[in-house]
Length: 362
Image 1: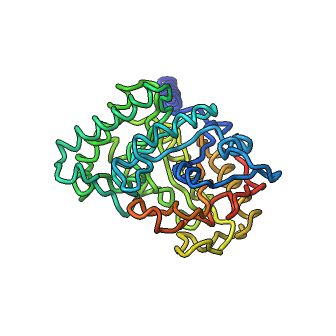
Image 2 (image 1 turned 135 degrees about the vertical axis):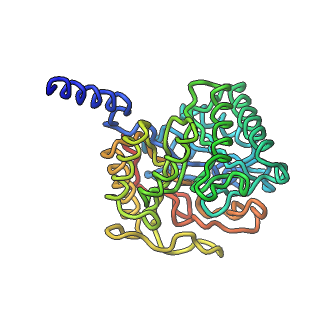
Image 3 (image 1 turned 120 degrees about the vertical axis):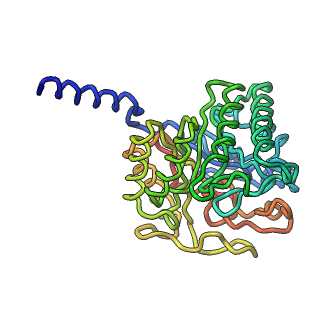
């Protein structure tokens, strides 16, 4: 009996180990979300490397370790940026530099995040059945259009920071019911795989601060049969807690779901000052890291180290190139008239000089 029990224990342990991704010794996805860059360049923004030489910002980012670009896509933004046509154009620039591509579907005409998940206007009257078709068709169309021009996405996100669902209210999780959300996520997953089976599907939440909340969400979609390839988490230390807690959440997500984990967004301020008339989204830092170029570099290095040691496979800095350029505002409905809430969070200062302390490291 003891021998039988011992064999059973070994079998169960081996099965669990096989179900988990191998522990990442390095970060292979070294990413930058450069969704606002195209507009900045169209407005004449200039970027300078640590030697003060003006260069293509994608080349500068590559030189400090970036190998992956993330681009958000909105359905029909008033600004005319971050839509399908612009993403196709920017994807060509990204791939021409030898970078891999992550497309971040917001399924909205504007920002989608934990506090808002607005339907695009064209889908505003659609119920869950039609929305399911909408998500499939839109995802498939964008993916196949990218594929047709030779810029097949390496990864996609089905939704952006969907802590309580997407395409509200139809796709919102209410009373712990994940049914409608699961239909939308399955549609996005299936459309992506129909376009290109090798494209990784990321499901992204901003729940890194709470293990119980992260488990609630991913348990909920798993119970409804949702498939995904990579678990994506946002982590901003001023909102999502300590690095120790982040490590715990990453490790748990890996072991609990048997999927790789990526930090889909992170950033840190290099100053408390503001470059324009629009109030900054972040006005304070975190313990141990000053609001300086040195502090920004050290905090980003610490997040990378934590993610790496916990077994994550990648990290994306959110909008490192979005310094204050008049006309490149945060509001797609008023891109010319709104300012930049992120000018102190970019890794380029207000004259386009890169922070020499920031590096992406495997």
